[in-house]
Length: 148
Image 1 (cartoon, rainbow, N blue to C red):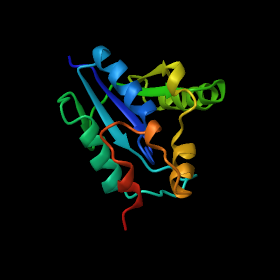
Image 2 (image 1 turned 180 degrees about the vertical axis):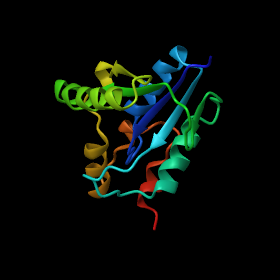
Image 3 (image 1 turned 90 degrees about the vertical axis):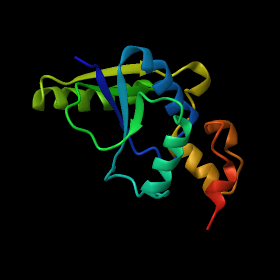
């Protein structure tokens, strides 16, 4: 049986922290599906198509990582930056386990250098026309955020 994990999130925008979690998890799974989700507590800033394009570009040489609709997953992969993240994610994982006992949630701690990176903070830097390039995957050009 293949070990398939999903990594859900809004990825608005996709950051080096997200990239790090996925790359570090890849040896644990046969496939990771990056699922761009809708968060009812957040108004999306970047269009879904653009976020999908960025993630596909980051992992263009990794055939075991896809951005797609999913069916039949067994694992949910989540990154934890802080203890507050843990409490929030733990509650969701427990509800998911009650609803679908066959699904396991796997948590990875962020690396020290990516702990402070959050999509919310990076988005705020970008909205104020700041240089957030150090927080984005290297293949994503900062000028793309200022198009239109």
